[in-house]
Image (cartoon, rainbow, N blue to C red; front, side, top):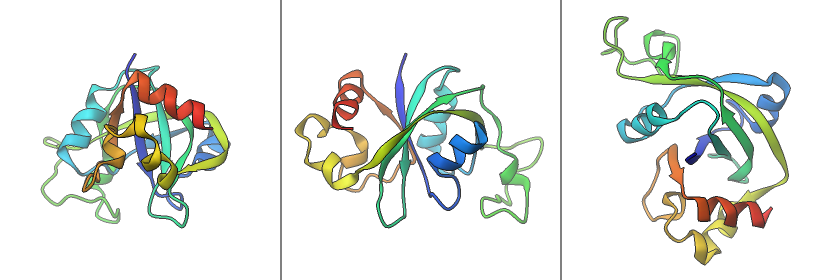
Length: 149
């Protein structure tokens, strides 16, 4: 099974929020490449839950894909930060899916530590200029990150 990394701002949804909820909708992805990765995910696949745009960005835990993708309802909600005026109920280009909690790390693995690990040099997260919110993680990268916790 492929593994993934997905970013969320902790004030929107943190690993601890997901732990409390058990299950939540992952929405608001507004990059076509990230959306395509999201659409390729299968139920049961794991992902690293990354806290972004916060004082301590980094990997905060692990979650699981809990259901198939479906049209992202936030694209149709004018009150949502993720509203897309070009989307309609008949033609919504954006997708969401449900995720479930697996594990919260005792400490966030900081981005600086991830960047310093030579075995993660090819991980999109540490690439200069990469801002994808959803990305694949190879089996060797997954193992390297788990060994860092």
